[in-house]
Image 1 (cartoon, rainbow, N blue to C red):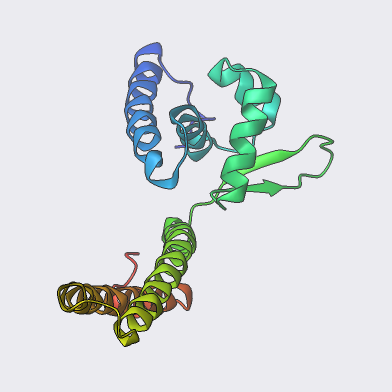
Image 2: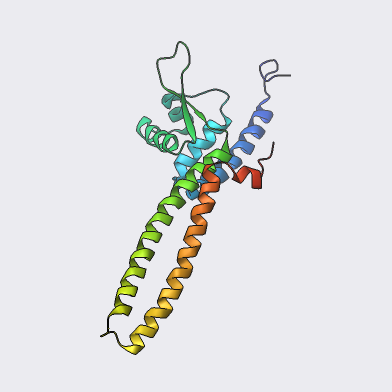
Length: 186
């Protein structure tokens, strides 16, 4: 029986709201992994439980936040591909709904963030390797300094291997092969 066919009792409504509030709270707190504020995480939770796409005004009323705050939060969620803008016949306002493919959201976000970190770290590592190799070739570099530089070079090359591995892991995430290795649950 649908909720439209039978009205909720006040007790049932409060029970459902309490359960949803707990889920929204934990989702909101964990959105920090995505660099998202708690209030934006709560906004995501609101949209997650919404039965239909919502406007900024509706979200603002529900969360008792300003339209500006709602707009900022929605823009963040749109950028992260966690929310989609949808079109509804007869509506002049922008409507938003949550992206339910959490698997793709996860891989998109973390692949992008990790890729930036890997590229930055590899760039620094490669620059350091060249600089150390240049110093080791110079005859005026002392024996003690040469030994320290050789040990550092080994450590940096080891780290470089890790970043190249991480780069391959990101490739597996981006091309969807990750789901062959760790299948999505239906």
